[in-house]
Image 1 (tube, rainbow, N blue to C red):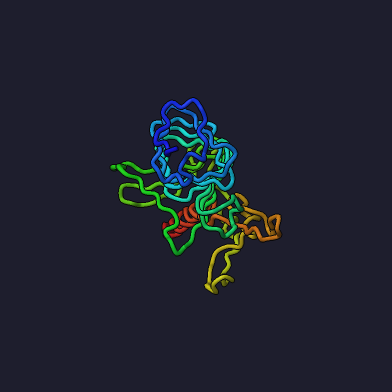
Image 2: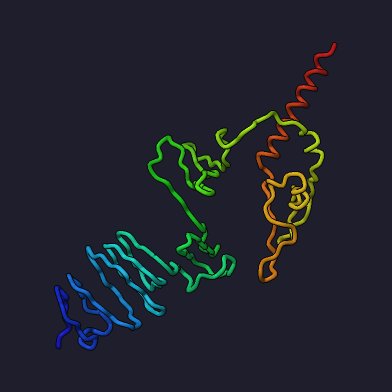
Length: 274
């Protein structure tokens, strides 16, 4: 029997033995249901035009290569692509993972380059520096408006953003709106705050370069809100989980400005004396 080129409104099943086993012949799937059964199937160079596809499962070992989907697809398993696949409408993954350049959803520090997204909204991006830049975001048609490149939320409340303005300057901001605060008072004790900090210099172990700033666990005793993580923390495998801090936090800057204003006032008072 010749290979059928079109499945228009077929009501019966067509044995796979009657098809081109490599799917090298162009096939048009019309108003019909096609069942491939419990098989590992590779689909290459297939276009599904104006189709709505639901409850499609790509089992382990199946692959898509050069497939264009112009309808809505719901996937309830993992997707593996072996070529250029295009989705021209919506792609819904109701369970499983979307993996690019990797074969499993491994931990964030696995050293396996590629990207992964899961249905919990978590994303992993591990990038080979030889193919830098690692990530590029370019927003068009901004005009004279500020472009909010990244907007951060915590529990549905805006927590800050990364934005660029019309002069191509980048701003890294944290939320500071008065509506998020209560009992605002003039800052006091800035001198004691500054005297309590312990600036240090050091040599970075990784490259031998000199550095200057603060040691996280020491700074945490004075400015805990600017330090993240716990001293000597490790993960489940015993690997170090290093502390980090923001040396340019609003708390540090506010105390420096407050003390500078106090010093300027005292200098002005001294200069005013006869």
